[in-house]
Image 1 (cartoon, helix red, strand yellow):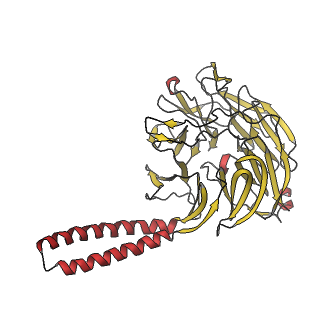
Image 2 (cartoon, one colour):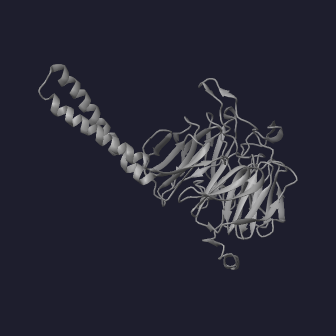
Image 3 (cartoon, one colour):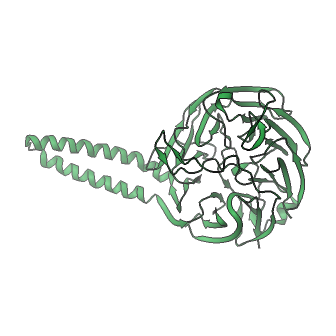
Length: 451
């Protein structure tokens, strides 16, 4: 409470940032409203920069005839941070440690060694940190850096040389998420050696609720959770979906490698259609999840809008209106097609009904054009944006990470409202308790707060 009162003049609804991208759905949305302009409060420069497992994308996918591929394996190209009211936490792929910094000063409070690279941000839950390591173990630490328990998720203790490091044959490359007393994590990146997805007791690391093994997809990338499903990213492709209650395979979404967004809508997902570059779909079961993939870099869904970040452009789509208009467009398009077919038949027969149907056809074309215009108006604004590496939404402000800079855009109209230099490529962004935390590919962590 003391900390909240101290910064009440600078931000609204001060909250933790307990996991990568803020929540289990990796939505990248915070309720905090930071008062601009911001100034740099502190900078933390670790001794070593990140040592990514995969440094660049494959040059081409010859089998699928895809070229100039984007790098989809960026999960450890920076030290992604989480934060509470007192501390900032991150894992290091360079020194195999979990680090804790003071939120106010950036000074290191403590560090904890694992036996392999820590490539994913910890998850903060019930005042405990849950961390996965390339050594094949899941760790639970206190916020003071004391080990509470350690659990081997690999099927056995077996080390190999991987990514120029000594690691388990089943490294934890998914991060860990916790809900309802159950921790979820994946172990393994070589399908032939089997990939393990495990749900186990988060209190003591003991009893496993279930363990699923498969030999088809790797497990690399931050897990996502919904009420009923676990989404396991599969490296360069989109997630594989499992039932959260029993671990049974549910659906393969890996057919596309575009940016993936699991849509949260006040806890109640909505169905969505498909439209030019935005594939909007359903995971259907007892309860439905909706998701979207986007051919650009990042997509954030909040308050009935989609914030879309592509190379060189930032835009916002009125999803509610768009969703209402699309069925109307399809129905009108079908009607127009049927009228055109009928018109051609009547013309060929020189039927006296031809003028009447021709009039109906022209009216239908006009109605279709009007709906198309309304759909185009669903794009509320577009603005040039050269910061294509990361994006979050905090209050009514979009923060985008670029080359050597962090930039704020108004979510209301897209106007650029603030920017600041950073040391390197801004790949990680978080907002917590009145601070904007930016991490770069050089390992640098910048903390900004209101002036």
